[in-house]
Length: 90
Image 1 (cartoon, rainbow, N blue to C red):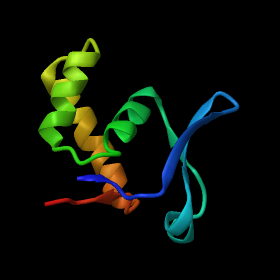
Image 2: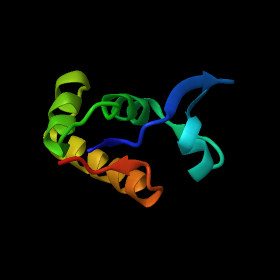
Image 3: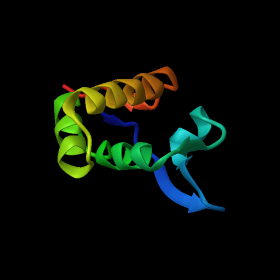
Image 4: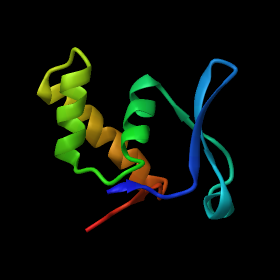
Protein backbone atom coordinates (compact mmCIF):
# COMPACT_ATOMS: atom_id res chain seq x y z
CA UNK A 1 0.00 0.00 0.00
CA UNK A 2 1.04 3.60 -0.49
CA UNK A 3 -0.30 7.14 -0.42
CA UNK A 4 -2.06 8.04 -3.65
CA UNK A 5 0.36 10.06 -5.80
CA UNK A 6 0.22 13.83 -5.74
CA UNK A 7 0.78 14.96 -2.15
CA UNK A 8 3.50 17.06 -0.64
CA UNK A 9 4.09 17.45 3.10
CA UNK A 10 4.84 20.91 4.44
CA UNK A 11 4.96 22.72 7.76
CA UNK A 12 2.75 25.81 7.66
CA UNK A 13 2.28 28.04 10.70
CA UNK A 14 3.51 25.30 13.08
CA UNK A 15 1.11 22.77 11.52
CA UNK A 16 2.19 19.77 9.48
CA UNK A 17 -0.06 19.31 6.46
CA UNK A 18 -0.24 17.14 3.37
CA UNK A 19 -1.24 19.20 0.36
CA UNK A 20 -2.83 17.56 -2.66
CA UNK A 21 -1.40 18.50 -6.07
CA UNK A 22 -2.28 17.60 -9.63
CA UNK A 23 -5.01 14.98 -9.96
CA UNK A 24 -5.18 14.55 -6.19
CA UNK A 25 -6.21 18.21 -5.84
CA UNK A 26 -9.21 17.52 -8.07
CA UNK A 27 -10.32 14.66 -5.82
CA UNK A 28 -9.55 16.20 -2.43
CA UNK A 29 -10.16 19.82 -1.67
CA UNK A 30 -8.33 20.99 1.40
CA UNK A 31 -5.36 19.95 3.45
CA UNK A 32 -4.69 16.87 5.56
CA UNK A 33 -3.45 17.81 9.04
CA UNK A 34 -0.78 15.48 10.44
CA UNK A 35 0.95 15.11 13.77
CA UNK A 36 4.61 14.05 13.95
CA UNK A 37 3.78 10.35 13.81
CA UNK A 38 1.32 10.91 10.97
CA UNK A 39 3.99 12.78 9.04
CA UNK A 40 6.45 9.95 9.66
CA UNK A 41 3.99 7.32 8.36
CA UNK A 42 2.76 9.53 5.50
CA UNK A 43 6.31 9.98 4.27
CA UNK A 44 7.08 6.26 4.59
CA UNK A 45 4.00 5.54 2.51
CA UNK A 46 5.32 7.56 -0.43
CA UNK A 47 6.70 4.21 -1.53
CA UNK A 48 4.85 0.90 -1.18
CA UNK A 49 4.99 -0.57 2.34
CA UNK A 50 3.24 -3.32 4.22
CA UNK A 51 1.52 -2.72 7.53
CA UNK A 52 4.14 -4.91 9.17
CA UNK A 53 6.95 -2.75 7.75
CA UNK A 54 5.30 0.38 9.14
CA UNK A 55 4.93 -1.19 12.58
CA UNK A 56 8.52 -2.45 12.63
CA UNK A 57 9.86 0.94 11.51
CA UNK A 58 7.85 2.74 14.21
CA UNK A 59 9.18 0.39 16.90
CA UNK A 60 12.73 0.87 15.62
CA UNK A 61 12.42 4.67 15.41
CA UNK A 62 10.29 5.63 18.40
CA UNK A 63 10.32 4.54 22.02
CA UNK A 64 7.14 2.49 21.60
CA UNK A 65 6.19 -1.16 22.05
CA UNK A 66 4.83 -3.32 19.24
CA UNK A 67 1.23 -3.27 20.50
CA UNK A 68 1.16 0.53 20.64
CA UNK A 69 2.77 0.83 17.22
CA UNK A 70 0.30 -1.67 15.80
CA UNK A 71 -2.68 0.25 17.18
CA UNK A 72 -1.32 3.60 15.95
CA UNK A 73 -0.58 2.28 12.47
CA UNK A 74 -4.01 0.62 12.22
CA UNK A 75 -5.73 3.87 13.24
CA UNK A 76 -3.71 5.93 10.75
CA UNK A 77 -4.36 3.48 7.91
CA UNK A 78 -8.10 3.53 8.69
CA UNK A 79 -7.99 7.35 8.53
CA UNK A 80 -6.24 7.21 5.14
CA UNK A 81 -8.63 4.60 3.78
CA UNK A 82 -11.65 6.60 4.94
CA UNK A 83 -10.30 9.66 3.10
CA UNK A 84 -9.41 7.55 0.04
CA UNK A 85 -5.79 8.59 0.39
CA UNK A 86 -4.39 5.08 0.40
CA UNK A 87 -3.69 3.07 -2.71
CA UNK A 88 -3.59 -0.67 -2.15
CA UNK A 89 -0.68 -2.13 -4.09
CA UNK A 90 -0.21 -5.78 -5.04
